[in-house]
Length: 429
Ligand code: GLU
Image (tube, protein in one colour):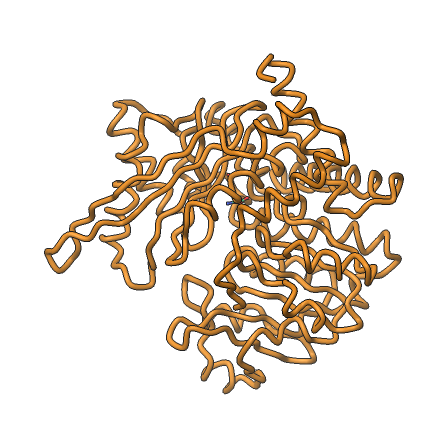
């Protein structure tokens, strides 16, 4: 995966915001309020390790905006986590909940750690420690966490349990992405990846392309990528390349099969963090190439579903000439410099906070079901998700077409306008 010493996701999020604030002539006080987080927390989490020693981890929670409802957003476990990354991700959550028009704000959390190197018991202690440090500043009506990079339903359940022990009652609305049967929603696991493909399906319609005639290359092989591949394949599309991070070699590899990868076969040789076993893949006939070659594949669609800063000034020119559509399953995968190149090549871009909004939309459905204590069938959840994603995508693409602006700018115009209006109507600015 490409990393840049100087890359700062929060500066990137602010640059994107500033450009659109100017475009819509946002007044100064609202601009000041929205270009910084409302509140942020940074704290130490001491964990008694299996060895008997204590290790101190750093945890964060950033609440960017609660003008439209309680803050909402995931918690990431990542060795390169930083406060600025969490700030950017919290801001993007505000735009995400606004663009799909759900009554929530934006927040994000993280812990600097590498769960590859932590036992299950150590991870449980880390989850409980994170909640203990922030228990008074989060909750169903304040700020609602969820899974993100390298966190799962099990982590959410440990966090919920700790929160309920501290507060002495049941609060299933405190956190989403819980296991099904423990307050979780059917379809939540699939929601982000499926949501990406609901928007891809609509974009293909506008490009006058049939999914059956298209190929895709996917960066990442975690939960989002796997479910995106599943639905894209069900629609008749062919995925010819996936890339996955190799923990041992500290680099990523592209796994290529020109007649189409077999998802279940690859999932069977993948660890819980999305790492594919290289030698087993080679035995199964995959071409295994080191580096970010996923973006050079001659495909119609690129699906970056890993981390931020993956399409940037240094590699955007290597995007293959055939690519017509990019749908961002990850948060912040494309830098503003790469955006310029994508725009000038006329590649249709479905921006991150639209393309990957399926997760938080289903989290909202999970909250609704938890509050009613009545759970819906999976089909009902996915139908509602499809309707919400399709409507968000269409409002963005309509505005982009009418105003002849880039799709990312159109999505920002809609989202910033909604958050700004909520803050102004409350009399904050
Ligand atoms: N972590 C996911 C995201 O970035 C989901 C957030 C949520 O469900 O609150 O959108």
